[in-house]
Structures are given as structure tokens and as C-alpha cells.
Length: 171
Image 1: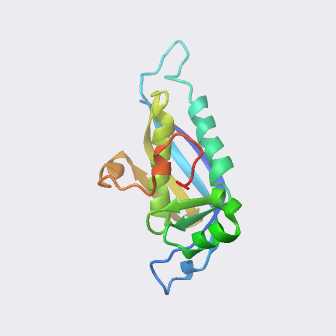
Image 2 (image 1 turned 180 degrees about the vertical axis):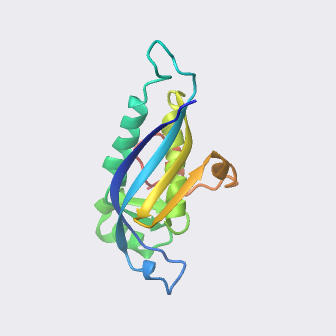
Image 3 (image 1 turned 30 degrees about the vertical axis):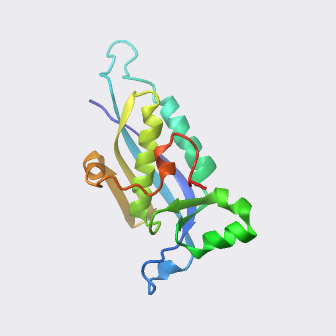
């Protein structure tokens, strides 16, 4: 069976708190790409539509979330003191903060994005997520597939990634 793939570019910023000596402790940004591969739930309609299902709705929901919520968001550990600063001094900024239980690594982001994609896809059930890959830099990427997701023991970066909406935090 064929798979369908699409990707999106976005800009982001984050910082990692767990390693005090890491250069990633300083807030910094990346231009990243996310690639997703979908598997149709039904067989190809050969000789008819020549597709199993239109992926326009899935693509529109995914690109809409990336463009409106993920692009230029600040990814933060829920324990980051910057969240307290934003609450006190810039509460409007909180809508642009993507939160994580733990550091916002590319690995955690890949899990969050995979869960969010699965939530969007569950709306109509026409596709399942086969794999997701985030190209963090020209030389670094993180990818996962359904087998990887099954091995996570139910860990989720935040409840926001389980909802089929444009949320990036649970504030």
C-alpha cells in the first residue's frame, strides 16, 4: 500500500535546563522541518479515484497548526523560570509558549508532534501516522514510527498534544 508524505518548515526557539554546561541552556532558535508519512486506512480505488482517500483535510489541519501555533513559538520546560516571568510581565506571550514535561528537546518535540498528528487524524479515521521526522539542523534529525511510539510507556509531553486543536500548552 502506498504512503502519503508531506512536510512543513517552521522557526522555533527553546532552551534546555537539564545540563547546566550545555550551550543549549541559553535560549536560541532553529529553522526546522517536520516530515510526516501517513498510511491510508483503505485500499487504493484503482481505476476510479486512483487514491484511497483525499489527504487534503489532514494536510490542511496539520499545516494550519504548524503555521498558526508552532511557527515562532518558544518551547519551554514547565519548570523554566521564564514561564513565571511571562505570567507576571508578559501574559500575552504565554499563548506562544509550547510547554513540555521536562526539557523541550527535539526528541520530546517529535513525540508531541506525533501525538498531535494522531489526534488530528483520528477525526476522520482515513489515515494513520506511519512516521514523523524533525530536521533540527542541516545535519541533525530525530525520527520515530509507530513502533517507537508504542515503546514510550504512555509518556506525553503535555495534555495539549492529545487534542485535535491548535493548542501548544495547557495554560
